[in-house]
Amino acid sequence: MARLIGGIGTSHIPSLGPVIDRKLTTTPEWKPFFASYDPVRAWLAERAPDLAIVVYNDHGCDFFIDKMPTFAVGAAPSYPAGDQGWDVRPVPVAAGDLAFSQHAIECLIEEEFDVTICQELRLDHGFHVPMSLLFGDTWPVRVLPIAVNVIQHPVPTPTRCYKLGAALRRAIDSYPTDERVVIVGTGGMSHQLHGERAGFMSQAFDEGFLDAIEADPLALCRITRRAYMERAGAEAIELIMWLVMRGALDTRVTRVHRAYQLGVSLTGSGLIALENAAAS
Ligand code: DHB
Ligand code: FE
Image 1 (cartoon, rainbow, N blue to C red):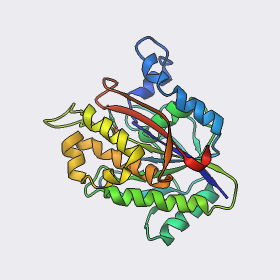
Image 2 (cartoon, rainbow, N blue to C red):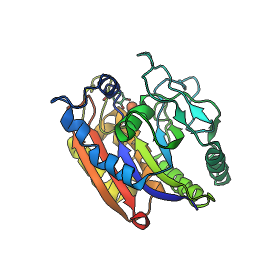
Image 3 (cartoon, rainbow, N blue to C red):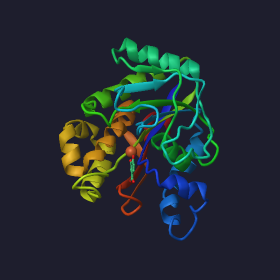
Image 4 (spheres, rainbow, N blue to C red):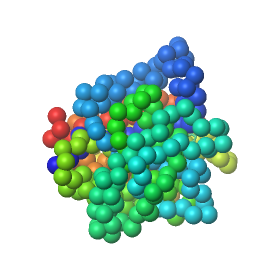
């Protein structure tokens, strides 16, 4: 049976794309930030997952506010990069896994998650920046992209996201191959990009979120959507995507790594990697 080895939560800051593409990641200015991903990259290299479920949000690249699926699941053999208006980054076309997509979609619909099935999907920085940070220039995994609406309100509840993760776990556990799977939740942490509170961040909120995503994720399910936005900025609602990741993991997990930095962009930049107890 397929096995979930662990999960990763990471911000997906678009301005890091050009830093990576211009090969500036080891300059004195950028090295400390990029080096904070090294322990997670080493863990991934050692655990060698075959498949990555990447929970991200589209930022007006393939979906727009005229039509916004709550949960959209990739069902394509491959996923090209889209153009968000800053040209297309020189990233790989992400390799999909049609059989795993079909299995996951069937399981989710069976469990009454009425997902949007995407036989074509162009990916944006929400997907690409985490992939570059975690895997570098070439990606050794097939992917299952899952887009969550965190743009057009009403967005899904934190609890619904957590339950989606739990349903994904059952899909992994019932997949009859020995694939090794990792799940990545992207976005956040605290940030607001527009309006009167543009630039708002909260390190206290973010550190508390990192504590709880590891040890008490149900506490994060009890925070209302409004409270996420009031306490951590409107775009901090992206953090509900980390709950999909956490909902897929065991209740008890082992922390592989955790990092946090302010000043990378307009976003509290966070990273956590959690290993399933049974995987170690
Ligand atoms: C930033 C972060 C995001 O999550 C995003 O979607 C856009 C911009 C930022 O920090 O600049
Ligand atoms: Fe974002």
